[in-house]
Amino acid sequence: MDAHLTTIARRRAALIARAAAQRDEVGHLVQPWLTPLSFMDRGAALVRQVRMHPLGIALGVLTLFRLGRRGWSLWAGRLWTGWQLYQSMMQNQQSRPRD
Image 1 (tube, rainbow, N blue to C red):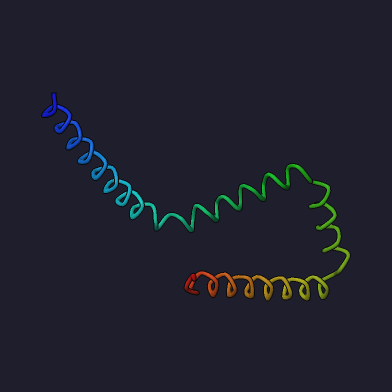
Image 2 (image 1 turned 120 degrees about the horizontal axis):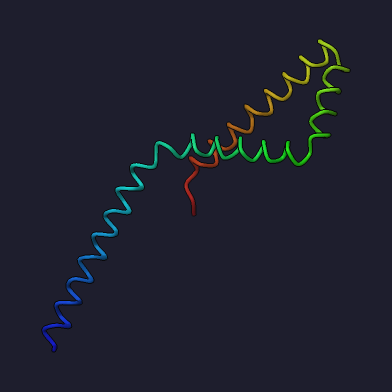
């Protein structure tokens, strides 16, 4: 009986090690897809928000038309600058070592 339990324990340890190796392999395979999948997830969330609040989008479009060409380009520039600052902050936060 003791030999049987030892065999089971060895097999269990081998299976645990194999599962860990497979998790590492899957992690390496998925790594290049994390950014595109994150982007797609944000896009899907945006679509859900638009479906829930279509009036907000309509008001935004009407505001852009009301601003005219000069106002629109001004706000587009501000939004682009804000986006670039956000991206820069996110990159700095990810590259900083954790304590």
